[in-house]
Amino acid sequence: MRLEALGASSIASVLSAILISLFSQLTLAHTVIQPPQILEGNNSQNYLVITHGCGEADVIGSSIVFPDGADSTIVVNGNPYTGALSDFIANWGGILQIYQDRSVFSEQDVKRDANGNVVGFWSGGGRTMTSHLFARIPFVSSAILFVPESCAKTVRFLAAAVEVCKLASIDGINEEGATSFWVPAVGSKYDGVPGTHAYDFPVSFVVNRDLETNPLPESCGTGQTVSITPSAAQINRDLPIQFNGTQVWPQP
Ligand SMILES: [Cu+2]
Image (cartoon, rainbow, N blue to C red; front, side):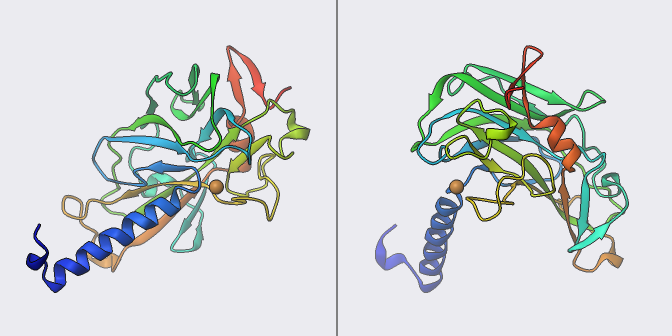
């Protein structure tokens, strides 16, 4: 585009594009899911993006747990909600699958809930991820559907993730260079330490309602933002890494 062709509005849009790209660089300072937001009703190709090691220590494995919706905490527009996730999302469960990809780690597998649905996955072993580089682990989410009668406009799944840099036992997981946690601090064994890097900073996976195909009921006003956080019991159960039936992290 020739410079003289740039009107004031295109300059503004170029500037905002630069700001948005700067912002997304900054958000990559922590482990994230890319893209961070997906649209209802669409299959989505995603990555878990690891953006650093544990301090200077290289990453030897990674584990992530999404809220299963069974005993998860639900917050609607900032207020506790005692009903079920199925009041908002019609088909949570069986949505996620990891792609086998040994370019970062040599072993991978899924974590399942009591119904056999994938609620997370881990990768580890083989070569390490160098602490000053990025790595990405591909996964797919199939179409997520909002309950048409609900007022939910945005649903934020707050996942618990960890980068493992040392095969510590539970007593050593918070030692320098052992792990980086991206976990909601809900009182699990994997809360991490208050005040340390990314404490209570879960990995968010946001699903937006398709307002064209599934408009909000008129009574909803501007709609609701719903946050789903895994329970401490689920994180305790699902965040550890089991390899061939044996727990390898934390070391038993
Ligand atoms: Cu960070």
